[in-house]
Amino acid sequence: MIESTTHTAPLEAARLRHSNLVGAAYAMAAAVGFTVVSVLVKKLGNSEIGVFQMVALRTVIGLTLLAPLFVRAGVVPWRTQHLKIHLTRAVLGGIAVLTGYYAFMKLPLAEVTAISFTVPLFVTVAAVLFLGEVVRWRRWTATACGFAGVLVVARPFEGAVELATVLAVAMALCIAFSVVLLKRFPAKESQLTMLFFFLVVSGLMAVVPAITQWQNPSMEEWLLLAGVGVMGLISQALIIRAFRVGEASFVAPFDYVRLLFAGTAGVIFFAETPDVWTYAGAVLIIGSTLYIARREARFTQSAEKP
Image (cartoon, rainbow, N blue to C red; front, side):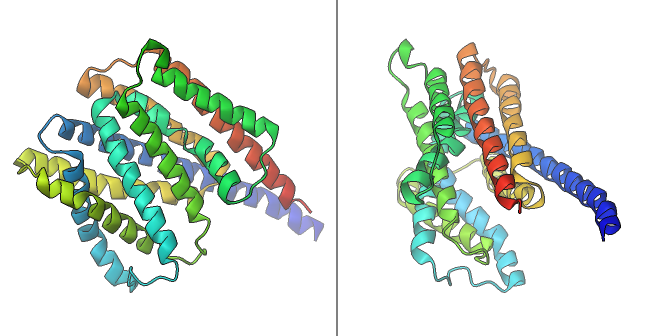
């Protein structure tokens, strides 16, 4: 029995390492995809196409892409026993998309990306308020440092904070509360159903303003809009796959390469040069979230030990 365990342990460790590396690869691919989406949104921001029109058309494109998957999986996406949770989560997701798109259109890509890394910090606060989780002083200290990083990125000491910066923070807040709501779903709840409600509700939130402000897209703009819809879905699928394949504590840090990609894309496509405050704030935010993730992993491992 001891011999069998001795031989099995290295194999299990090797499988875990392989799974983690595959998960990391998916996470980095998702980071590229999300960066592409932000670039396309920013390019559309230089046209007459408004945020509401982008989101409404994104819904149409997304549902068109998902329809064959619904048929293949035999899923009736609007049938669920958790309608209230789906609708609440979808509204939060719709607000996150609208505010996020506006922020990417108005601010440097690296700045919005840095602010988006505050999602785990807001998750900590939301988990205490709505899930009754107990958070100790070290995690609260790390969370406070992360929010201090947001202030560094926003630079309120230079004058009034831009509306786009406030909306970028609102985006992260809505995503965090949406993540907390995921814990309310049973494990068997279909991800296709989650995507369906998110797309439909966000589309309904945008459709009336989109119609009143409608601008006929050119061929180039149609291609950009299609790219936003397609790459958005692919990126979501990649990041979900990343966390299913690998351990969350191992995979999560690889999402931070988005800051490098966003900074590089900003320089290449929009002649943006992130200043020292953006990177200083990003260091505080990323450092805080990494610390929280590491402590969570340690507590989980301790709990699993007999």
